Length: 105
Image (cartoon, rainbow, N blue to C red; front, side, top):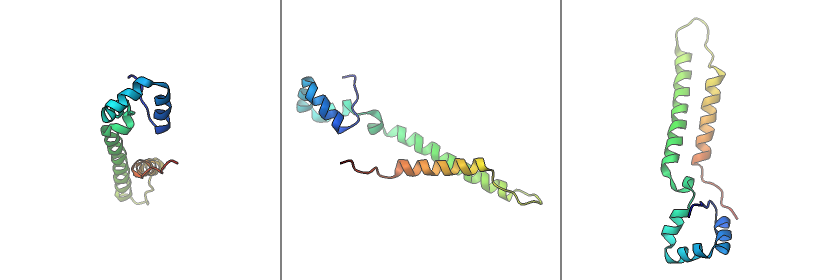
């Protein structure tokens, strides 16, 4: 099987048209589902890499803002908009990744 299935409706449609897949699913359901599952649902390493990269971006933006604010100088320092944008985008992306997805009807 060279195809990957990413949703239950797609699996149901494939089962209606592919009797070989139906037979494999009846004989070894766990192994068959593991084989045809899309990698983003089964590969935990992808999520770890993305979460680590986004977390590092948040930490670097936060530390950069602190260093710029506390650096010696006679005028008040303002945080560059790039740091604010990077930190905000990374926090939003982390929230989207880590929040539970809504159930489909």
